[in-house]
Amino acid sequence: MCVNCGCSDHNDTQLVNPKTGESVFLNTNNNSHHFHTHTLPDGTVITHSHTHPNHGELSQVAPKTRNTTISLEEDILAKNSLIAAQNRGWLKGRNVFAVNFMSSPGAGKTTLLIRTIKDLKNTLNISVIVGDQETTNDSQKIRETSCPVIQINTGAGCHLDAAMIEQGLEKLNPLPDSVVMIENVGNLVCPALFDLGENIKVVIISVTEGEDKPIKYPHIFRTSQVMIITKIDLLPYLQFDVQKCIEYARHINPKICIFQVSALTGTGLESWYKWLTRSVS
Amino acid sequence: MHELGITQNIVAIVTEHAQGAKVQRVLLQIGKLSAIMPDAIRFCFDICSQGTVLEKAKLEILETPGLGKCCECGLEVPLEKPFGRCQCGSSQIDVIAGEELKIKEIEIEEVCV
Image 1 (cartoon, each protein chain N blue to C red):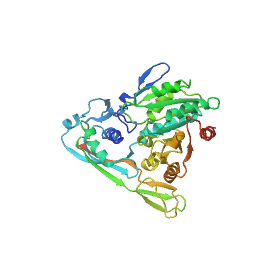
Image 2 (cartoon, each protein chain N blue to C red; image 1 turned 60 degrees about the vertical axis):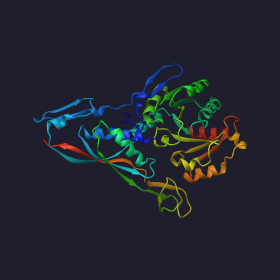
Image 3 (cartoon, chains in turn green, brown; image 1 turned 30 degrees about the vertical axis):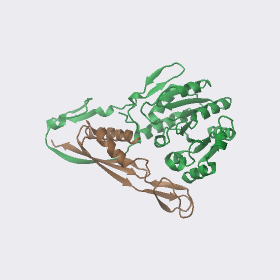
Image 4 (cartoon, rainbow over the protein chains, first blue to last red; image 1 turned 90 degrees about the vertical axis):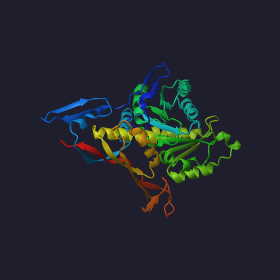
């Protein structure tokens, strides 16, 4: 069971290096709670571990019990936040700028990433961590740009969490003074809750979706610093109301920075690139 | 449906603190703006607690209302959603309450020696 995040079991989370084909199962389980201490009647203190789940031996030792209330005040996502803070330090120490891209599936994260990598290859040193439930398709596409990439397959998990990024960063080993682009699992709900230690969060919405996505999924639009509207080359064929979408986004998050782009035709990319390179430096 | 994962996390944290003792009651604090549905947590809790020290424990959830503070005029604004508008017209509102996602307390069965 995953203790590091709020997600499902990590046992089936895989990290794949598409270059070598090497894949490893991430072990983010924390079984340290199985170690515990007993004080024996003669005062001896023993610490030991055991893996059986029922811990039933206590009731056999002494059948008399009373109820005690323990105040915990523990944040359920505290462990994720702690690992995220460690990631932030790891990145800061190497002067690596990390961007977390989030969107619903099919909004164009991979296409925008590939175009950005190609267009900025002489300006920025970019490497990528890609999250998907299954397949290495996205990392294969990104690898064709000859950019270093690591794929994380979350299995049943619906988002990336800080522990996955921690191991992904170690494996990816990005160069100092570089940029790490994190492509989150396509999902507008859960990624909003999980801090990865990134510098900025970018939410992507394509014009083939409804313009009311910002008010339907307010959490992700509120935690993001940037919103990129993609596929604007398709606007003549669609009912998507760009102004309304921007209004909704600004209502949720007045400080959000908004770009309108087409990764296919290149429209609007210049201002996104300018913003990104300025933020990195 | 991240509530399932969140509930597994709750079970793991409580199990860690209970140190083998049987858990009778768990009190959670879930803010109305936390993107977590208490009903979904209740639904998952019975399943996730099976076979653990939390099995049959009573789950209590304290829901805290959303509250924001206007960045322009400083007025406190009650919030139903994680955004809103202040009387002064500004929608720049800092959420100051309602995003809690905490295990407040647990009640365990302790052995009297």
